[in-house]
Length: 258
Image (cartoon, rainbow, N blue to C red; front, top):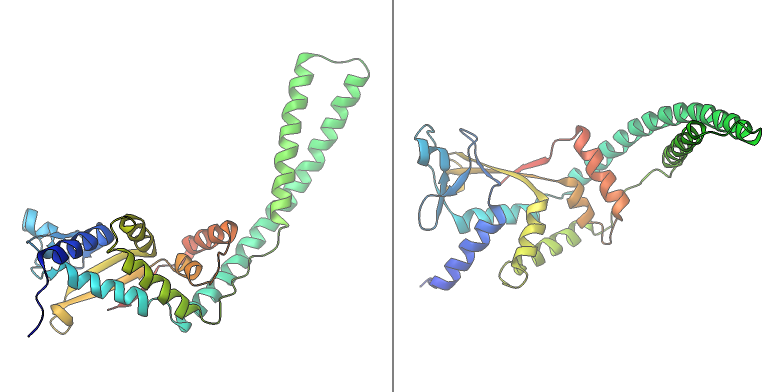
């Protein structure tokens, strides 16, 4: 005979699901949110509040949490997905590198002009032509000089390279599983939920008679953060920022159907 969940465990699961997925669940029919519409079930908030959506399919909060977190753990990072993202990342990095190189040339040209003007002002001051206006102009040019030098230095930095650990997929699954387990620990539940939420862009719930629970679940994840988690070690703030910036310029979040 199946073991019945205790009221405490139901409340904990519901709280964990609410905390982890709150604001991420969207109705695939109207685009509105999915929220609690019963004691333990989620449904389209637009249908409930306005009656303007045809999506009457609801799902248990623990069920959608299980499906979403299971998909996030097992299917979001495959060798094919990782390889495609890395190829796209490298291509986008090359494009951004060319743009940075062009800006560096412009900055170098401007830096030469600024330094020429600084030298002229210094020479004038040395010849006794000091006044407050010259001093203020010199300070402004020196600030611009520093900014231009920093731009040139940044553009000449090494190109970031993503090198995934050979067991990246297993490392990723283990880390997500550990975060899931942490949802049951009150002291660290919020931190674990925040970490898991950061990996998820959105979850679309659409009625589908052939899908489990009569509801198709499509999970979109932030591959930049997923690859960071799967690296086996910290990528470093510079590369993590670069991953996020590049991923945000031309890539849709990777989407899987659960």
